[in-house]
Amino acid sequence: MIGAIAKAMKDTSAAGLLLVLLAACSTAVQAASYTMYRDAGCGCCLEWADHAATGLNAEVIPKNADMQMVKDLQGVPTDLRACHTMIVEGYIIEGHVPAEAIQKLLREKPENVIGLAVPGMPLGSPGMENQDMKQPYKVIAFGPKGQRVFASYN
Image (cartoon, rainbow, N blue to C red; front, side, top):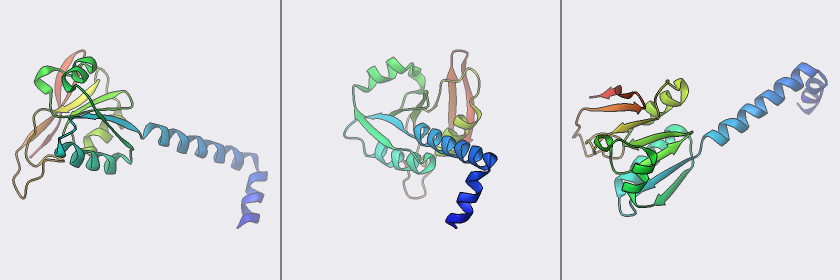
């Protein structure tokens, strides 16, 4: 095995490919971390963080803060606010946004979108599971040109 790797490394194209793969892994690790601001006493925030970390393979860095100030500084529209705010790769994630919606945002990077939000705390959303009780909810994309539905969950 080691001999095969050494032989491949003599080939410049194989060495170049290895460097590209290492750089890609390094970038992926750097992009994986996020900061989540939450109220110290909120249990649903931790449940949601577990969901988001699993979906994003990210490191959770909880912060206790004046949540209204955090939301104001991040530009979260008043009508979209929820209990916690996360910053990942420069995007604002407000409330119980499913990991799959966050992954889609990070993958597609739509123009004029600075964040996603699930207003309030709908039952059945990640972190708000309660037996079989579920409420339909929407993930709203927001930015300088307004708001739009990014995803719907029934």
